[in-house]
Length: 392
Image (cartoon, rainbow, N blue to C red; front, side, top):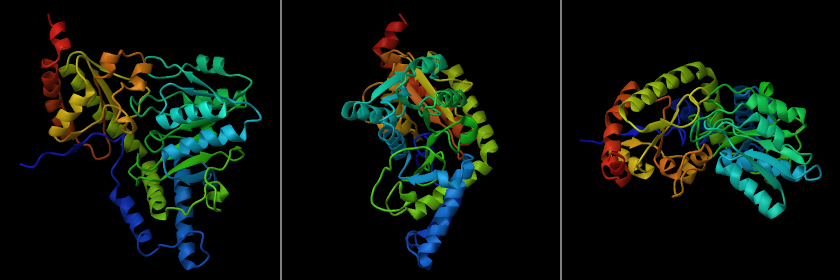
């Protein structure tokens, strides 16, 4: 009998929707021109590029000329931090971020500290993973040039008070960047309402192709160019544009905007059902992150007395694809920096499981997990000396 295949890792990546693939295919075959060329082939590609820029801009209420296509969220994060740091060195050298950022932010901050003499403040978060606005205000210095706080966390799904952060940044005349890779296309985002200057986004988190993303740069924001060599992306990010992928991203953004309400209501219902049933059926279990301020598809559990790697292996044997945290750190044996930051001890942080539902998740999928996950946890706990000791 063929093993069931059930995907519950939508925060790591999403499948490409059929409508997206259909939109892309002509630009892999018939309309293959270089968008910088002046002939008909080039103009066809340029027209597609312009349309995609409008589609992505519309998703976040930006102007098309404020959207710059990149190779993905990590590149957008790197460009935002390094571009602002180098362009504003004469104003100061201080950056504020949080301890639960994606490593594309944290490692770039470390690079700027180690190699270029910048000073970085890493804000603590509360038990739900949200920064304290008072901490942010207290961290601001005369030399602060950038605040970079993620919109929603990729591991625990917690959504930050972005509008309030944007207002604080504006009051102090500080550039505000947010990593919205998990948010843009999954929840409503309006860059004008939120007072955002720079925002990182990614296609493959919203049912578009991998290898393409965007950086929103508010008109008038001063930052260094990221890739040198040509006039593409208004001379800020050189390199021949990946037109098929960009076209796919544009279509994915259009679909995300059109389906937003249904997407949120359906995922929230499925998530809450799964979360409540697992908490009811498996003792010594906690949900990490905010329940109220949370991405609609995200659940992050911690199961006491066991380790996440064992859970993932047994679930995979049952055909269930899940995660113990960020896909970008899956090779690490260290506990999640996010779970440590919200105050979990090592032994509980190690027993984490992230399940993320998406547009193709069904009620039957939830049934399958609810039927099988308790047995997986019970099996692993039966082999755990810590669990056996706790029952004495």
